[in-house]
Image (cartoon, rainbow, N blue to C red; front, top):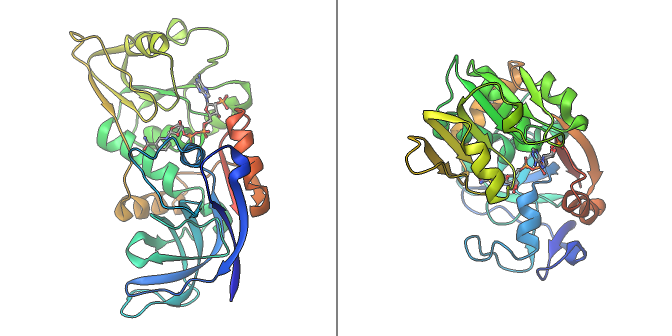
Length: 309
Ligand SMILES: NC(=O)c1ccc[n+]([C@@H]2O[C@H](COP(=O)([O-])OP(=O)(O)OC[C@H]3O[C@@H](n4cnc5c(N)ncnc54)[C@H](OP(=O)(O)O)[C@@H]3O)[C@@H](O)[C@H]2O)c1
């Protein structure tokens, strides 16, 4: 049986995304077949599509896009345990992606999807949520009473970072433009600085314990933001590295998120407990994926965008 996929056969601009009919995969040992309810767009995939990640994330072409998956189990491979057909699951894929009607995935990558939100929304969680979890808790060590600056709070990762830092009990200062102001306040930000209105540091009222940077910065802007962190504080960047002056006594980490089913399950628990909301700004059919890449590259995406096959 055939299924629709969104694949790239070459690296380049968004026009390299093709919509191919390919055979529906069969789950191998340890795998399941997931009927995809949705994937979500992550801007790092646009960088992969452009060929910018070949040095540290080489992929074979043709390559099916869509690292996030939410869907239902449609088949179970030999020896795969813990799943029944019809189970609702969510996960971050490695290898073949979920910009397709079906995807084969190792069962170990999947966890039960949140029960309180539609599967099409749950697809927003894995990549952005895992990145946020590891930035806030593992690297940022954000704790109750700290003052935390979230730079880029309006984006897909930023929505989760803001909510997780609040969940940890921090005072959150978020940077956002007018279009994301309401959303970041809804996520619990105590103060919002409009980054389009002038230098962020001049709007800060005193130093912060941690800077969580989620946007690409010029070296000048990075240095200015780094100067806002108190001695003994922490900087975590998921985008451009942000280095403090050598004698500042600030620990800086430039992180790459990893897959971790336990972290994902914990995020699902927070969603079902009503502690973390999914900031879905748009939903597009699979056939629109190239356009979503273009919108992202033009800076016209905020929050999370889900893609429905
Ligand atoms: N290292 C890792 O493991 C890892 C993992 C995931 C993502 N990433 C990278 O991290 C970055 C963020 O990912 P994402 O999914 O959150 O991206 P995204 O959703 O595309 O982020 C878009 C948001 O960035 C905000 N923004 C743009 N320029 C800004 C600036 N100068 N100051 C403050 N905010 C600004 C905008 O906020 P407004 O709406 O407020 O204007 C916009 O909503 C991307 O570069 C992505 O490739 C890295």
